Image (cartoon, rainbow, N blue to C red; front, side):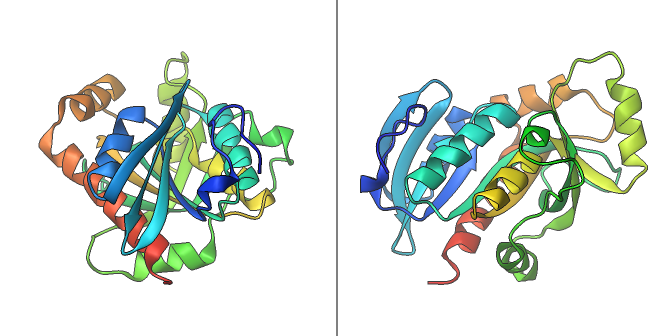
Length: 240
């Protein structure tokens, strides 16, 4: 449980539960919901803070974009004693029924990224902790959709629209870049994991529009962002 090289945290924190976010700026949004929040470190894309929620200690850590940095975060969180990790992230819709600002609880992920195959073959499932999934779905305070996500490696390949059209016809609800890694690497390392995603891009619309609107504070997207964080905290602390 010594000092981890990337997240720059060690086991002296004695924290079992963590929320991970992509954007380092989202750490501050999580802090706004926590009691007695305190910044810890900021190294590369990994910004961290601690606080309490319902009397329980919670770590929040940003992971940047994509599978490799998510895997690094998970490996190092495991090394310092974390046991439960929930991603409060963003996604794009792959179904017309999934509206901007709605929340998706991910029941499983298409492993359309290159990293997790370095751990296990593609036929190994990317699935969450059943305990955390059930908690998120059965609660009634925050409306959610549940479904499959496609996790991928990039936005700007020439055939992206063709690939997205293919998966949208396979009952995939949303797309992100980290959930499959969270589920595969987390599962292999014995972590309980769940991904909760805020939709920021309408079906078949511009990614740039969604990301820019989230950054600038478009109301419905920001509401969804906060709701995803509140749900993650509720799920993490339900058992105590």
